[in-house]
Length: 145
Picture 1 (tube, one colour):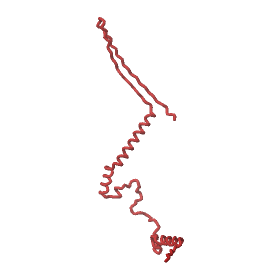
Picture 2 (cartoon, one colour):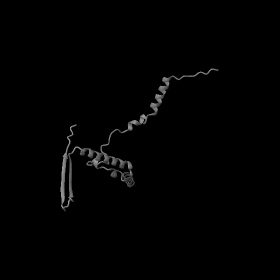
Picture 3 (tube, helix red, strand yellow):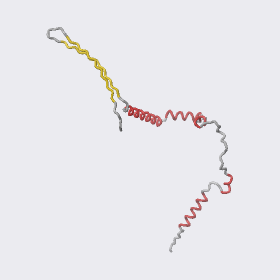
Picture 4 (cartoon, one colour):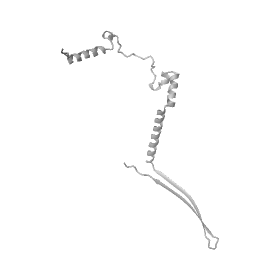
């Protein structure tokens, strides 16, 4: 007994799958499409003529007290936002530190020194010396590059 295999031509199979795809993906029946409105309304009911988009906040759009509490809790207990805020502060400080190197630097030093030298060769004389030291330095390096 011999078994014969029947081969379906591949172009018939592709055509049949294409037909199923086209027929199965139609979202609205053809006879119902003439009722669809494609025009925008003249005026939206929620908008007022002088209302600016910057003045609209989510609190006014969603007056739910539970939502407000959840958003506040999210801002207070979100460690990722807090970490990002600290990274931003760290970057700002690093920038300020690098910008400070472009400014002239001023160094000042002041000091006072007093010394007493007693001689013991039979006399009761001693020498006292006072020294006041004041120094300052102003330096600036031109950044040509």
